[in-house]
Amino acid sequence: MPRRLAAALLLMVFSAWAANIKLYLKDGTFNLVREYQVQPDRVRYYSVERGEWEEIPLEMVDLKRTGSEAAARQASLDADAKSQAEEEAAAREISKEVSRIPRDAGVYWLDGRETKTLKLASSSVHTNKGRQILQVLSPIPMVTGRATLELDGAHSQHVFTDPEQAFYIQLSDTERFGVARLTVKGAVRIVEYLTFIPVTKEVEEKLDLAEIFRQQLGNEDLYKIWPKQPLEPGEYAVVQYSAGKLNIQVWDFAVARAK
Image: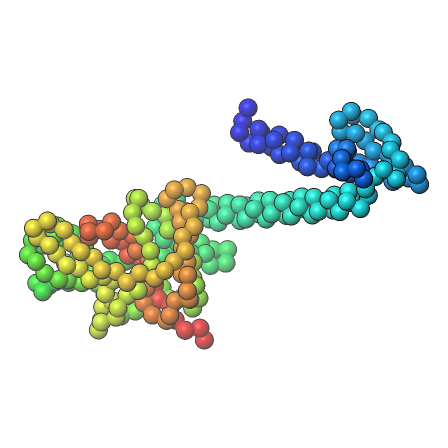
């Protein structure tokens, strides 16, 4: 039996059981009933145990306790139904979001009904020997030293006024990702600071990462990300990387003050 069908049948059985009512008697016992009717001198009810209508003298029934518990149970059922409806609505909204994001690796954002792509930036490593484009930087320098990973230009062409702008990142590999604050220095933006360690052939990377929320959507490679706190006006980038491998991918953007 398909899992969804089994779950639906189980929910139907539980709902039917939960809808039953405890008809309390004044001696503390109760009859489990589907429904009951209060008449002038008796209570008529449908017995769940025996599957038929029965009657009992009104003076033997604790109507106050029965009504109070029935009302509380109904309120609980209504709350559960509301919660389930909200969860289903949220799932539908997520499904809509996922359908709008391309399957190709990259970073995207939604502008009304339009899906837009954040362009992958070309970055370079600046050492005391000059600058080299990151994509062709091989092998990692074997001399101990410090460097910076930079983007040309003091400002990004992608400017947002929403300090809580959300992005969607479709990962190209299972790696770390986040939103980095960039440092403007003259005509370049510094993404991270690097320290090369020749003996172990490693590189230490220092990123200034903002705290973000991460929501996995649809599959293991697609995430929605947005800042936990509004971003201050300045230069930023969505980044994807493996620590120590100098393989960082950078999608730059800026946050401007709202006019």
